Image (cartoon, rainbow, N blue to C red):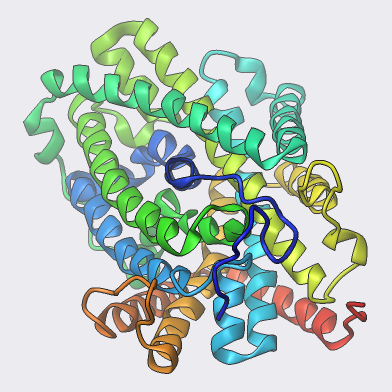
Length: 435
């Protein structure tokens, strides 16, 4: 376990420049993205009037995982996140595989968000739904955010804070106006969907959880946070409470104002048009774009830190472990992730990439819940660490739920994950010298 670094730089040479409220902003940006604007329709198509309760249940489920990450994060003050926890609990191979899979998750997430951005913009710029316009939106957003993150962690954190306001203000306006137009019979009196089989239920759960996903990335950049052992748990717990309330409220207004919610490609904007006209729909589209850009920015900030950590440990080319001497950012790792995300984004759809990212992400959730059980038994609750409510019950419940959701994934996604792990094993088997 690491002890707090006394100076302005972490042991890895990274600048500690991100404070408590910026960390909270990053956590909100990591989670509130395309899901809140695009998934209410998918949730309603699967769950009907039960959608609000499904959103709340997903938030409670994710809270168990968030508490595990808060506890694990309070033990360490350096880069690594899930990979670090797995390595300390189960050894180097487990740490490598988790870091490898989470990095692949970041690529799939960045790709799905870029496609989500094109879908959101397409409501008012139809060219974004065609090949040329879609490429422009996807490539332009990824390249812009990569440049911002290469320029410096302060730039990325400040942009993240600005995008938090840009995404939340339209949503709060949507709720503030929409709540007075909710048809409660429409919201809760619709037809209950036919009984779902296990696989359909699992797909619905994965889509709902995608809307909450991203919190696991926050601790990856702990080496660039001030007092991460206190500030990371604070940010995680505050974020999940705020986000769960926000998502449930948005789902309620959407299904209480838009009768054709299940068929909508841009449900929040379409619902806004019903009670606020096209100007409000325009504002929701702008909010959706800023929301997705905010989450993409957090992905571009935090994702390459996994790659940087793996390369620093000798897995992958040495150039990926470099920190820019003037900017103090892992610039090569950021550029490399941007290139891979761009290639994947242009080859897949939002929903399929979202589901793939959730399957790979579940491996990190499972390993972190299990790591908390091991680390808590080994290290207890030393001074400065965050005390986990409920003791071992929380990580055990999180572990069981994550395993159940993994087993509900499609065979194609499970096969893709297995192949990715096999490729990772090859990298692990043949590391390069770190000195």
